Image (cartoon, rainbow, N blue to C red; front, side, top):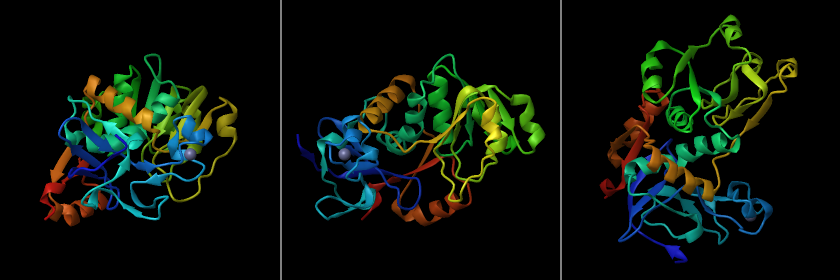
Length: 292
Ligand SMILES: [Zn+2]
């Protein structure tokens, strides 16, 4: 199979343009995630890190493919894509649940794997939203001890439901001090400004603070905040195709499920406003069969 073209069933609404695909084919159930093309020859592609392709990775929406066509994501009526970028969806996953995993799932699974999170790890997840609630599940199912850093009491119970054993509300500098040197890995899932000078000392020696929620403003770091623990600061960009398949298989085997609300195409304006108002619990999935 070189190419596949099927009718869309569901799309995942992360924001107004980030629509992903899952399909119900006659035999295999498959999905297309964030990427639809890369050169396949450069060092990044050969390393299974297609998102860093030297020729430029073609993303699933609003991106110019190598033949000049512009990708339209899950809003398009059909999709043609190289088989390398088509992912198998295990039977245990519903198509609706698989759609957010193809974006939020790989975005959170990839850094946890890149930094070898496992049963001896102590992990903190900043934010319990569209990314965070999946990150907590993955980290917990990998065996890590997981703490959520939230901004209010309202999500304490839900954090525990997703597998977190700790929940901390960190506002003032003195809130951070009892947690100094406690964590191997901190994953920031929210695109807001954080005072890194408070967060970096929470890491153990050689610990890692990783951004997947990317704030638009520059960050400011006093290097003395990483001088005492040799902590590392990094960011993670989705994940490669092989890792995405591994993530789907892991989610199916370990019952990792995004919490979703299925909506029709006419509900998109209301849903988008709810996203802006932070009223989403936690991902919308569009039933594309409602697109007439
Ligand atoms: Zn490449």
